[in-house]
Structures are given as structure tokens and as C-alpha cells.
Image (tube, rainbow, N blue to C red; front, side, top):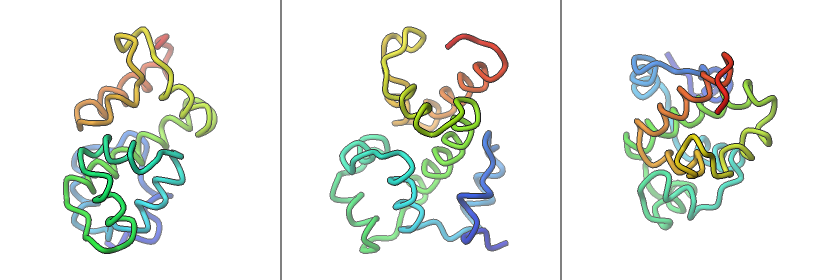
Length: 139
């Protein structure tokens, strides 16, 4: 299963752990997808490095094809692509979703939701909250 070409288009919102494993082992996730992610989020290399718990230099190397993405980075990248698809669907646009992510929120102890991108469980937590919004919770 070569999902590289259509990875961004075909990745589901609400991706399951088994789907993540399948993508990790069947798709060529690399430089192109990282560049697409940067475009999607409008985040700086510094911010992306914080979300992925790597140095800014590592992000630059990943984007310039100097270094192969490690599996933990790929896993987070897949989860965040899926989260952005869900967020765009629920909020109506990626701009509205980005706005929500960047504003402190009472339901997150006045943290910005994007603050939780640093861990897999944090990404899953934001996914759960967005799903709650989709079905009527006020977050």
C-alpha cells in the first residue's frame, strides 16, 4: 500500500492507532509532508520544534532533506494532520481552527490548545475535545 502520493488528502480525521501503524509502515512520510504541515499550520520552525520536542535545527534539516524523519516525528506528524482535518471540518476552515488553537481556553486551564501538541496523549486529548465540540460540548 503506497499512500505517499495521497497521504494528506486521504488521512482520516480521527485516525485510529492501528491506522497510524499502517501509515507508518506503508507510506513514505518525509520532507514533502513536513513542508505541507508547515504551510497548513503557518507555524514557525521554532514552534514546530517545540511541538515535536526536537531542536529548531532538526526541523530545518528535516525540511531540507538532510536528515530522515524518525518514527516518533512521523507518528506525531500523522496525528497532527488528522487533527487538522478534524479541526477544519468542525470549525469550518483551517483559519478558524488555527485561531481556536492559538487562544487561551478556560477548559484547558487557560492554556492554548496547541500547547498540548507536545505529547501524543495531548494531541489525542485535543482530538477528543474537538469531537466533543462537534457533538455539542462547549469547549
